[in-house]
Image (cartoon, rainbow, N blue to C red; front, side):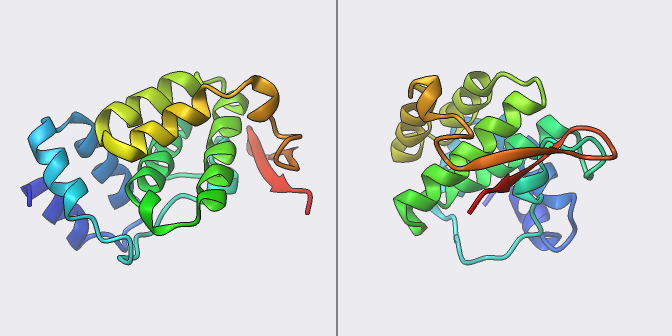
Amino acid sequence: MPEWYRTALAHREDPSACITFAEAFLAAPRSEREVVTNGWDPGLEWVLPNPWRLACVDEGPGSRIDRIRTDLLFQALAIGAVDAREAIMGFAVVHNSCRLADVSPSAVFEEVAQAVGGSAARALRDFAARSPKHQSMESFMLTAIADPGGGYEIRAKW
C-alpha cells in the first residue's frame, strides 16, 4: 500500500483524514490508485463529511468542493458493497450538493470516475448522463434548506 494511504488509514478517526486521503488518491499515479482500489475494505470506518451538509459553507473540515469530492470518492470505492438504490441516492445527494454549491456536477463526477475506473466509473458516468429531470431533487424527494452559516443542507422529504 502507498505510504499516503497508510498514513490516512492510521488517522481515519480524524475528520480531516478522509479529505487528505481523497486529495492524495486523486493526485496519485494510476498504479497506486489501483492498489488502493483493489485492496479497499468498505467495512473500515472513517469519519466522513455529513452527506446532507456538503453544500454548507461552515461545515468543515475542508471546503465544500473538498467535502463533495471526498464523499463521492468514498461512495465510488464502496460501490460494490451497497445496494444499487443506495448508491444512486448517494449520487443524487452529491449531484445536487454540487449544484447548490455552484460546482459543476459533471466535472466532479468525471474527476472521480477517471480516478477509480472500472464499474464504479461506469456507475458515476451513467448517473451524470441522466437527464436533469432524473437527477433533480424532486425526482429523489429531496429539498434544500438554507443554512444560517451559508449554503444549503439537503433533506429528504420522506
